[in-house]
Image (cartoon, rainbow over all chains, first blue to last red; front, side, top):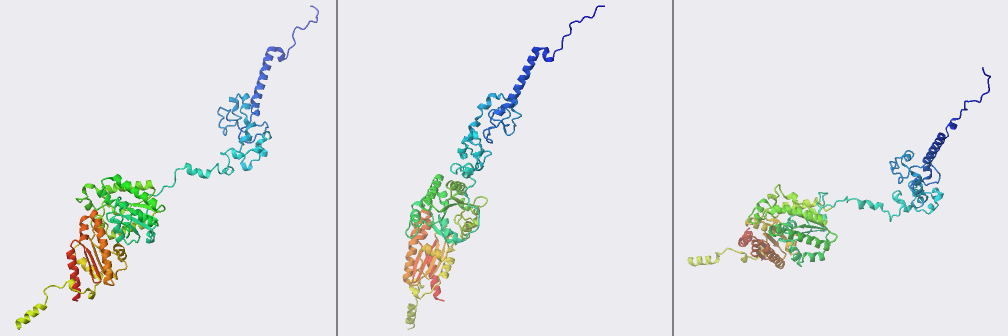
Length: 376
Length: 160
């Protein structure tokens, strides 16, 4: 057997893993470095961004933002109130360049003032980032109407008190048809004026109501303007109202003569409107009320004289149009029709001896209706 | 002689009834209300007349201050029919009231001429008389009957 000779070791010394394969090690190292860098960038990205432009003043500290900037956060994180930025950004953001671009905060706070947390009264410029010194000059007033309590806004620029009327449809609907109300005594009518035809003459003679009457048998919506029939001087209506404009309430009652004698419905309403305008001119402070046309009795309406006219059908139609006319002119409509018309739209037979003019009891019932329907 | 006596007796007895023209109305005393009521019941009207308040009558006829007593009835508007009796303080006041009533009659006759011609004729034919200190105004379908009714009432009142 040969002598043991010291032989050079043939087994190679084991190398550390990183020594074994240099190339692999390099790649591995690079990967690790890349990963680290990437992580740092992601986590640190928000550090360089402004938290938001309207939140608490940016202090300049690298703090975790309260919420991501909605503008730059296109994804789901946009509803900032619900999205904690911590969860969102990583997925969507290549925001390396974003922060600076979306970072108005350096300039924003001063002008726009983040009043959300700063009720202007409590807005201590002191807390505004020193970086943005100008806040001292910051007029919160200019900023955020939406966030500022109205007190901070000069009333001239912010009339919230008046807003509701502009935006709301009118909640007040003017009354047209005079409703039943508390009964008034006859003193209520002391400064009232009744203008009308023979039915109003009957009212003046037999109702017992002491008031003022510019009425005449046969008066209609044409002669009321032209005829001198008032007082000993026989003044026209316009003249009489010039002499005495003291009336505060005017009750009008026309229609039965016109329906039975005028062919033109339009003429009737044109003249009625002229009368209203005349009264508005002469008695600008008076309340004006149009009384519904009282129908004829069935017997009178079907007489030879009126049969072909369809008087009571017209009465019903005209009353609807009169009500609309009153609404248009902002005056009142007194629906006396409802107490004088039967189910067929005829005057109750007992209310009249001739089917047209009211008897004493009916005139008094008419006035009683007016007593329980004072003008609002 | 007997024949002469009969002739003389006959001459003293008038065959004509006593009329208003024969009476000294200053010696006649009439109640306005009763007179008007008699006329209403004695005459025929087209409408049912209703009593007017004195104040209303004053305004309607313009007779305020011219009478001591008044009774007035009118139509509710269907007709121009009227019964009006005034007892005035003197014949002079009665004449003044009668003039006012005449003016009202003429005016309403014009009104009704355009509105209701038959009523206008009633007005133009109406009884309107001044009898001493009494004034009577009746608008009715028959003015002659109205006069006779008033006359008979006055004469009859003298016999009581």
